[in-house]
Image (tube, one colour):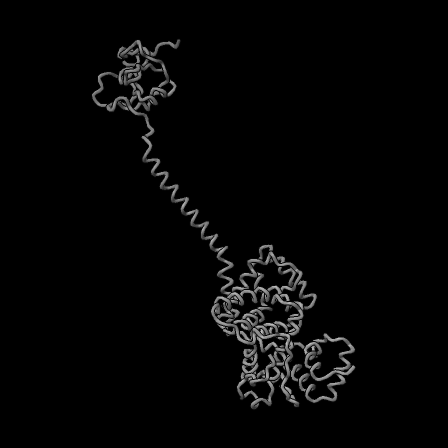
Length: 218
Length: 203
């Protein structure tokens, strides 16, 4: 199991967070900045995963934070605060997307039959891409480009689960889908990304990142 | 338990997440040891999870945090600053209304001083206010009771000098001369008047 770069909040941090929430609710508004600071990047990433546009994602991230501030009194500690924030962000981003793409058909991948099996490409020798390479901007850009190739429903799940480190249940709650759907979509997202990122595919990071025709079983 | 490659591919995500039961996990482990392709699928999946899970992948545009805080400032403080501004405007408006209202009321009200019955007369400021004087309803002056210049004797009333002043009566320059400022060309002295018109005893 690979180590996660972002650890989940410790009990002490959660306690501190609960106290901050109480104080914000009691009128210490300026503490809201402190409360959201650890999640600013995650909120933006969640918005970007859905909208794929920096300006829109930033605007939606701001809107989501504002909404969280206005409705913080309604936050019940049934879920983690971060999950609640992400849920608000996902809803905001989806609304924005619906407005912007009201007349645009969904990508084929979004309408795919999730029941079909996915056959991973035969890259018998996976050459590990070391984490150190993330220092290079082009590596990060290629990873982002591969992620953008995924259909909306897969990208959302992958970003929340593997980048935001939400649990299966939290991902399901944030997206309003079942845990079974999360698992199915996550499997596909991971396998598709693996294929896209295979260093053997058209040369390391140089080739066009797209699925080869006929490899998608759906 | 023996598993085929297709089953490994179906379970690879759950396997990485530790979501498969121990029996299946053992079977997958066994399969992978002898299958390069499935081993590559598993390695690749783990590798990309590690890469995408890195915090460096959560890049935000330059200045994102600053802009976010500024937006929050603008939206959170309006409730405060707007309230302050609103209160300020309310106070200023109320003060302005008060000033304007006071001026308008003052302008609309009649002068509250006594409406003198004789525009030529002088105010009886020197007359003791509790001095009992006599007035006639149709007259303009108030007099000492013994004053021979009282008209309409059947309609006269006895009131205090203060009341008489409030009703607009002015002091008789003859009987109340001693209380009035000395003017040039007076034809009697205060002593003479006092002697001629003694105040009658109170009934």
